[in-house]
Length: 61
Image (cartoon, rainbow, N blue to C red):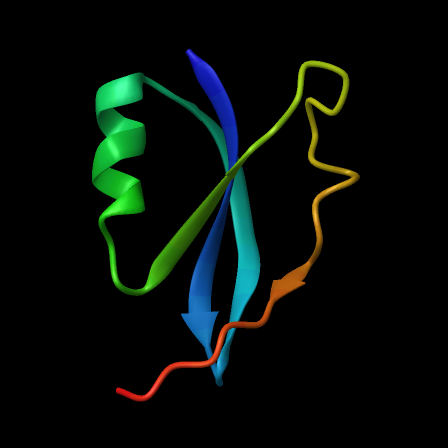
């Protein structure tokens, strides 16, 4: 199991939504989403305290 922080697209940025444990197959599905971003958390940051609250990416939809 991998611990990840999931971000959802909202108002021009990806905002932190939740943290969960996923399998490698689930991680692959999450990474293919157009409206989600995923950051893997390190073992010493189980609750995502070091993860940014907002990810800004520029897109031309």
